Amino acid sequence: MAETKREIERKYEATGDDVRLPDLTKVTGVAGVVDKGVAELDAVYYDTQDLRLAADSLTLRRRTGGDDAGWHLKFPVATGIRDEIRAPLSPDVPRTLAALLRSRVRDTRLTPVVRLLSSRHVRHLLDGDGTLLAEVSVDAVRAERLGPGVPGATAAWTEVEVELADDVDPDLLDRVEKRLRKAGLRPSHSASKLARALAETAPEAPDVPVVEKSPATGKATAGDHVLGYLRAQRDALVDLDPAVRRDLPDSVHQMRVATRRMRSAFKSYGKVLDRTVTDPVGEELKWLAAELGVDRDQEVLTDRLQSRIAALPRPLLLGPVRGRLRIWSVARRSGSRRKTLAVLDSKRYLALLDTLDALLDGPPLRPAARRPVAQVVPKAVLKDYDRLAGRIAHALELGPGGPRDLAMHDARKAAKRARYAAEAAKPALGAPAKKFAQRMKAVQTVLGDHQDSVVAREALRGLAIQAHLAGESSFTWGLLYGQEVATAADRERELSEVWRRASRPELRERLLA
Image (cartoon, rainbow, N blue to C red; front, side, top):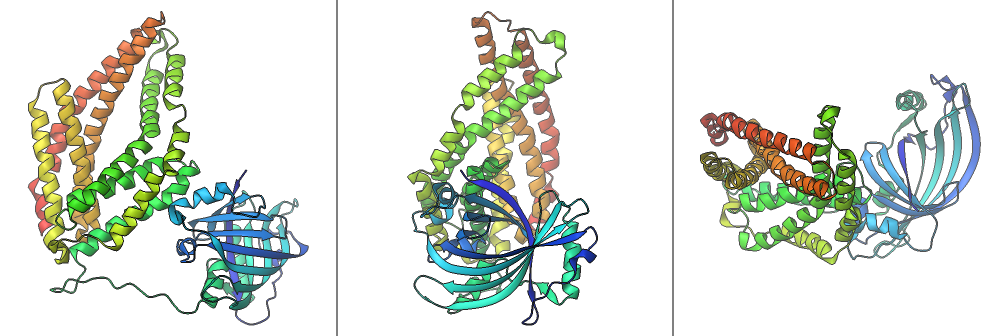
């Protein structure tokens, strides 16, 4: 069973050959320094031969020696902060850790790339009560490159690590750093031992990709702009895969958003990328978003109904309302997480990731892709706006009822597409695109709440039927149904004003300026 530890640390290197720690009891809050002796550590780091993990600042190692021997997988969280996921020692990469790397590794084999032998001298910094504040270690490191290419290449250095203990104020690290700097130590240029080992044993520096420029202006082309956005969404998809597997908050929702943004961009920027190629990929992204959305949609619906129930006066709660909602929700979500993980492990999903990589490496560019951004991107955004305007006009012409609900739902999807197109344009068009996206988001929010009401009404009708068949009162469910009808009517009235602000001519004119 893997366990996760949040690691907050800083690394330092000496300006000379001799590394001596200053008196750290002079650091405010540190009452004592306890020498814990020297540990001999032997760590073998694994990666693909093209170093995909290292490229994303991930490290996977099998380490013996010390008090935490085992497999360690580290994900960057922020500068100096990583989540370390541990698994017991075993000959091969544990399945729990391999799954977290699948979006990056796919079917490629993980092999040893570096071996680090470290002689670690550890000191514990304690407060006045003897509570551990931080661990300071002086590591004498010898690195050896493994695998083909540069076998046997070595490097050696000495560094100092300061790792914060759990629940200790990170300000302590600043105070310790001040003392270390006075002693001649400086923050390390490498984020990890592995990064330094790879840099110092590499045969040559990697080539830097050249960004295509417009022949007419020398500026980035529309194709470069759109591909940059799509690559960011592809990268988000890959990055969020392990977060979903770890069940981190909001990870499923964010992964779903990345799939939708990419699919929307394929449609919005059809003048840049050939849709005969991208449309089939978009359908696979639609499939993935739908699979990821099962659990998320049910969670949102349950939260909505729970909030409605919580707001009702007690006399209006007739029958086991909360209990029935809980049973209904559990039944609908049963096995949903297991299904999500099965999707992420499926051949279809991994094939989609490979397809996205291939498409972005060899994009099906159309002639407009070579034109400057300002000649292509604003027109694409405004085309999506025109599509939205037509759908809203149609929805507002209809009377209340099923056809209007469907028209509002279609308008919501168009608003989302227009918003995503504008968000994709922000790096090139700046404030006008940002303002436009905000207005589109406001429209989407109103239409989204309307659609949520439509879905809630259907659920409430089903709950009322279940309650009736069980001999319970269906009064409360009917009352909630009526509230959702009123909410939908409110959103329909609100839409006119929100759309009036979103459809001001100056918003569109600024995009073309």
